[in-house]
Structure formats: C-alpha cells, structure tokens
Image 1 (cartoon, rainbow, N blue to C red):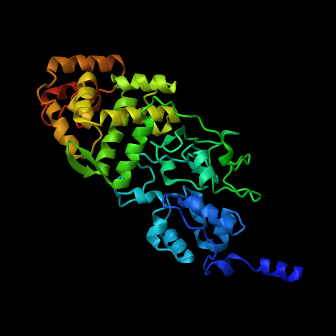
Image 2 (image 1 turned 180 degrees about the vertical axis):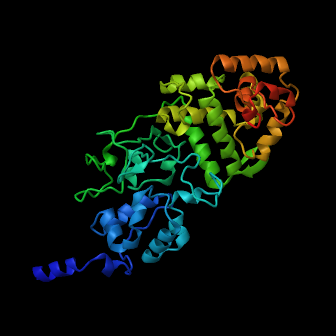
Length: 393
C-alpha cells in the first residue's frame, strides 16, 4: 500500500497535472490580490506556491520572476480556465484592473504606475516595502487586500491603525508567495513570523487621515468624483492628486494649516529630501501627505487659498502634465503667466548666476532660474547668450 502511494506521488509531475482542472480552490474575495489567492490555493492543495505553479502551470514559471500582482493576460486566462472561473473575475484580482480608474491605459505595459507601490522584486523576493497589511484584518479574513498595494493606503479605515509594510520581527519586506513548507498562515519568508499575530499602532483620533483614505477609496470604487456640483471621471482626480504630491512634497510648498496640525497629531514631519519620490517616503509621512492634499483639493476655496498662500504660478500648477484635466484646467487658467515676461536685463543676470555656479547656459536652466517659460522661437533676443550648440535647447 505504501509503495503504491509512493509510486502515485512520484507520477504527479507537471506533465500529468498541466492539463487537469484544479478541483480544490478557495473562492477569491472581491478585493483580494491575485498573489494572495494563489498562495491560499496552493496551501489548500497541500503544497507551496512555487511547487504548485510548477505542477499545474509549468509553462508559466516566469510569472514568479517579477511582481506577481501585475500578471500576464495569458496566465490569467489559463488560471481562470483551470479553476472554472470567468477570466474577468480573476483579472479583477490583478493591479491592472485599476486601469482607467487610477491610471491611464497604455499600449506598452509599464509597472511604474501612479499610486501603486513598487515591490522591487529581484532574486526571488521583494526588496522594497511595497506590500502592506493590517494584522487585525488578517485575523478576521486571512487574505491580502488589493488596496494594500496603493500608496495612499497608509492606515486601515476599519480598525483605525497604521498598516505595516515589513515583518514586525525582522524588518524584512513582505514576499507572501515565498512560502515555508511547514506554514499554513501568511508569514515572513525569512523568520517565519505569522503576520496575523502582529500588533499595529492606532491612528490618533484627532487626525483626519482616515477620512481622507476613505474618500480616496470611494472615488476609486465609484470611478467618478464631484467638484463644484459637476461629476468627473476618477482618473481626472488622481492626475491632479499625483501632481500635488510633487507640489507639496518635492517642491515643498507647505504654507497650509493642516500640515502642522497633522504633523503634531502623528508625531513626524514631512522631510525635506527633494529627490525622494512620494512612494519612497515612510508610511506616516505618506499618511500626512495624502491627508493634506485631499484637504486642499476638497473645494474650490481651499485650492484657491493654497495657490495664493504659496504664490503658485500657472507653470507650477501645470508642470509635468501632458494634458491636464478639464476641471482643473478651467480653474488654473486664470493664474496665467502671460502678463509678465523676463526682460533681457533679468535674463542677463540669470546667465551670470549660471556661469558663477558652473552650470550650463541653456533654455532649460534659464526657465528654472526665471520661473517662466521662455519660448526659444519667440525670444530670439536671448540667443546671443548661448554657444551655437546650445541655441536649440
């Protein structure tokens, strides 16, 4: 009997299972990450995720060589067929399902999308703290929520605690598909700590951050938002939200009362490292940042006051936009810079400054120094400051 069982087990290769239906599979939760569901399915079949992939999807081993939650369409199709689900149901578990709601659709796929935390997968594990969790949510229903991959998901709106973005025991970034054979719950691949046993810090009751996160979730789920009694697509809101992360965080335009209030509430300050991107900031800094920006964008009056108090010009309000949304365009157009153009004398002083600092004298640097857009086609009087090679800059 034992020898026959051993023979049967040895015959369970990827060749014999690659075309079979997966009979034992848990139902995915509506907002579950595909990596979470795949892990739960592997454990239900008494194996680890990597072995499960090898047994049932031997031709798709490469999907474990990157961020599993940005999954290939062909693998999603194969997976849905093997469990008997509609493809759309499995596709909704991937981060690509946010396309058209959180970020724009692109012909050529690029995983660097606004508000999606990068995990920096390399060498079989995540190197960055892009995946987060609430231990109390895991105790209630043990699965990883899709919204936990969003940069503005810094706290749990249900339990009102800060999310954790690393193993509480050893500090390692989370890689949930890297599973230990003796474990039945989500755990740290390095030390084995089970995440549901972690403790999380409560968000101060005075803070407005939980309300801000709930608002962003609501806009994303509905697919639209309201501003000045009109309805617009959600993506038009998130484009402006992303721009203001640079305005407040990188350009340090921080003359706004709720910044100081939230800094006092949370006990940390927005740092001054200009080169750091908002999704690389500590989780509490991100919490303050998105709390403040949703406050700024909550009304026309707030947005207008922030612009005036921080002396923002149209160039700063629209910089880096390929095409800024209609609701925002209508509002910021009145802050036009057309009323003023730098004089030749001012440009000459800017050139002296660049020379003194050993910087290149070109259109890009002149625009930065003057704070104005200088059109090389219209400002021919500036050309004599450049070398011949620099005129076309």
